[in-house]
Amino acid sequence: MMHAERMNESLIDKSLYKALEALPEHVVGEIIDGELHVSPSLPPVYGVVVFRLVVELGSFDDGFARRGPGGWVLLPKPELHLGPNVLVPDLAAWRRERMPELPMVVGMTTPPDWLCEVLSPSTASRDRGAKMNLYARAGVKHLWLLDPRQQQLEVYRLEAGRWTPCATHTGAVSIRAEPFAAQNMNLGSLFER
Image (cartoon, rainbow, N blue to C red; front, side):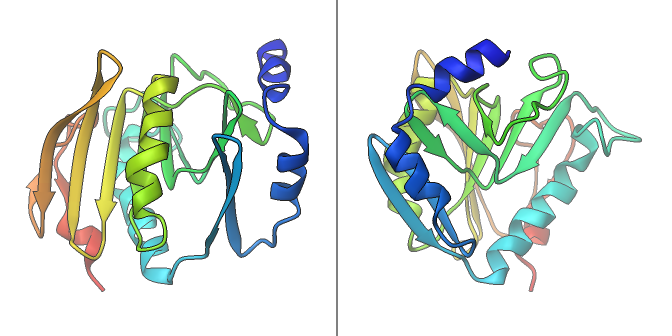
């Protein structure tokens, strides 16, 4: 694994990565197609949505799953090093068989099996555009776009290298959404204030 980590690191522009590392802690930096993108910190409501989503999906994470399907590793805001790109999704998950142990590095080179982007006015166009394309190229199998303002979840599956919309759920509904369809999830609970 370490050899692959070093190979991938050589693809990332070192001067851009140094600029990313020098950013203040209250912003999120990403390198997308050779450009450094900086996003402001989001209001607390976005963090609450991510936290509640982790709680809803907790029974799938092997570290939390006492009763439930298990089989996954969930991580909030991992730094993904995918080729020359550095991306920070709001939440990502790997099937345990693909990631038996968490690597002891900041930049993870194994693409997740699933990830979720929480859409905000400052990030929505990038999340729906360049980042979705890069996630498809990296082979991420499932993608959720969660919009707290619209109280909506869009579920996508990667098929033949393209995102196929599977479902769109809105409001206070109980849903089953792949790849976590083994259990119901209360979508409305993510957005309660």
